[in-house]
Image (cartoon, rainbow, N blue to C red; front, side, top):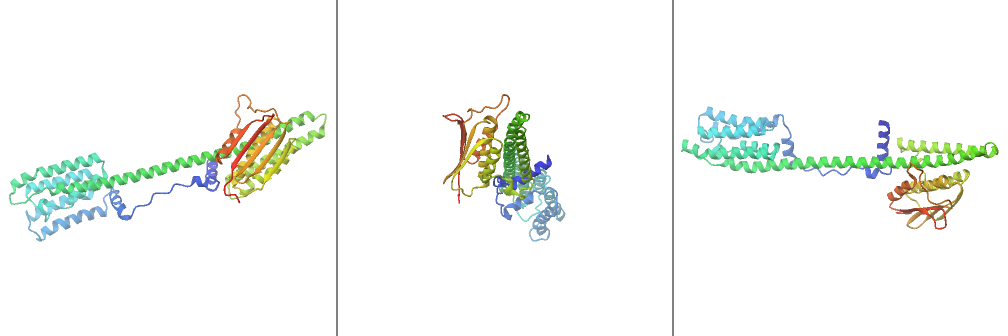
Length: 421
């Protein structure tokens, strides 16, 4: 089975259905600045970027206070400790985003109550809390991140009156709560965009898998039709001629020998065609044209059927054009299957094969003067006419199969011709 699957994969890529098997076009990749937030937030293990963010917040906000660039409120030790405690959670914010929001909020609450200002701004304004909120909104589900942000923001806002009462000389405002809102909205937008792209990629892969499955199913169906046509046609001839040989073996041995020779020829022809078909599946690049019957092979088919005893007339009218491989193969198989049905169901009938090359359509007509309607044997299902209908439908043509008004049976396939040369 693996070998067969590989062969079918080769046929899918290089055969007539390669166009249908081509993968869908991928969505255009967004620019690097649009992918940067998602790339930064997709890393769970702390790395150099996390340490750099934490160090940048400490150096940018706390070091100026320690250096005396702005008035300091609190001892140098307290400023250093609070600055470190507010920066450290940023190192692990992507692994524990909610915990980072809570930890930084607790640090700001403690600084407000202790009256320590470890940044140059009112209420220790800085990027720490906003960064933690952004990460939580980006990495957690919407309900969890929003709940944590609201609780932390309300806590920071609620402690302001108490901080102002304990330290009347310090200005206090709700800047941390205000900064948390745009940070959460931006983080949630990044998360929603990443989720959308992931779902889009999953949908693209799913559709590609479904399309590949359909292509494989069509290839198996096409292969089964070809095998059915080859085997059915050859076995029908063998069955008829073997019956003739059995009846004439004693009284007319020469005629029996002719029948046996016909059986041998039909068997070898079927084996050769099956080998070519299987070789085409294994390696479509090898003898591709010879492996595919075409309209030009119909005279040889007619000769073989005549040699097998079928009274068959062949007529080709119109100017043949250069048709596609799929149309030529289907036309040949339709004629072969219709003539095989004559051999199986009306072996003593006279048959006519007419091929008409029109300006916009190709018509294959097989008629006979046999007993008429063909019904499959009890307990079996006929595949011949159904297979012909499938071939015609694939080419958007029309097929009629039924009794003739003056007796016999007729199969007429009309195939539209495009880009005829």
